[in-house]
Length: 414
Image 1 (tube, rainbow, N blue to C red):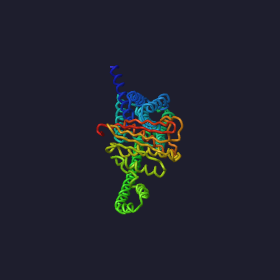
Image 2 (image 1 turned 45 degrees about the horizontal axis):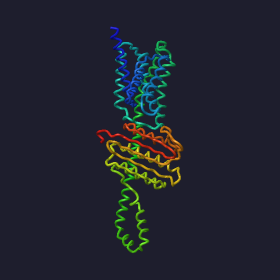
Image 3 (image 1 turned 90 degrees about the horizontal axis):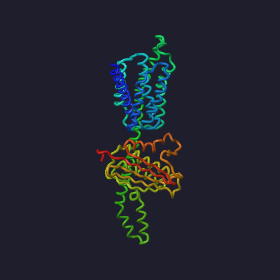
Image 4 (image 1 turned 60 degrees about the vertical axis):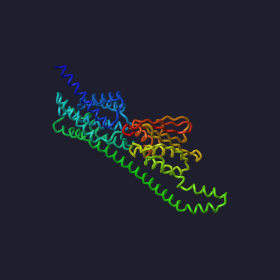
């Protein structure tokens, strides 16, 4: 009987840890099997720890162990993992503290009650969590981390600084009860805040894509107008050429060939978003005196979201333009190659830069003055690549920067 009770208790604690691990995986990515086991251990410890008031021994080591497991096992920035980890920890600690101090279930009912709570938490998070692979700027994560300090601070204050529950008078029990309930339900507000911020960021990206497309279509209209005008004037040009002496004809032809209708490419491949981004960036390069050597072999529309395509091409070209803008005009040159073949999309870009020696991938960061507003660059590209199970390599050696990435296409995308 004792063995059966022990096995049932062990099974229930593992199930509680598994449910909490599923909650965390709805909000953070954890890929490898060893890391999943580590995360499961941290969640098992967090979900089943008994928390009494003035319980320093259980509270502090548990929260540190849980956060370390989240930081090591999960993907994403440190700020993202720390914020989500504290959100989950404050919620579970609030529930455990309420149960252990106010409700007082210490038999099979506590197991059932805890699994019901964690099961409801998992279903709610799965329903309302943002899409996988979401990311926010460091600025937004700092704001969310600041908001998360409130519930975790409430729980810490009540548990560590309050009187033991059995030492409280009846009139003193209401305040910690209300505070713990506030900390418990603040998770809903924080999750909603994350979802709203991500939605707002996505709208901003979509607006950017829409503006790029609008500029692209306006460029097409201008080029079509130039073609119609050139066609209309062709008879006059041919008459003028016939009347010119031989040595002046070449000069006249060269002047005609310098017109934008002949020099500005608007169609690089079969993907309209790629065409739009490349066309817009090439115009910027022309203004800055940057040579642009481009070779794109994309025979069909890329099977990725427009926002992701814009993030990849826009950011790699922005970084290259920024680097070339600091160099003398004779060194300004950007080479871009992109190809979609045999189930893989690959991109390679190279440009001269002011760096000396060899630089590792993790050492790159924006050199713009306002880093808060320009923190997405390489991080944004890395996020897109990672979320699509791709890979990216960056190097800078002897004044030459290069970036190579590839994204495998799924069976449905091929």
